Image (cartoon, rainbow, N blue to C red):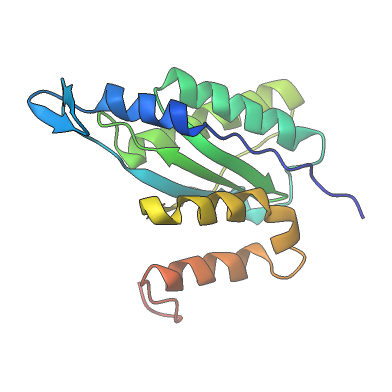
Length: 180
């Protein structure tokens, strides 16, 4: 059985703390430290799929793609806490910057990465237009990181459609046919 190597990118606690110190601000005291800007701590678990959920993320492509997404995110000021994928989709746990919306982050990451795949691999590649984005509590970070790291194992038990429906139900969305 051919599998994808786990490609996870996490920041240590010290780097997370540094990020929070840079992101918190003026007139606000946090743990005895005066901040210069508004305090923002918004971890978001995003999931997006290939167009028509085609299994295009091969053993050769996936590791390169994950590294490319990390570089794009870094340039945009988006911290990636964990990233991984499987044949037809990507999971990212990211820290949403105070100056960017989820929509803007996803537009930039998906746009840059599909352009890069098309250019580097000479294929016609597109992401599905939609994505899932779910807020993650501080107490849930380790659980989500573990979930993202273990995508290969998760997909021995269920497919992406089952995974997405379970995530939607967990976050209070109605997944019955005909409901929007």
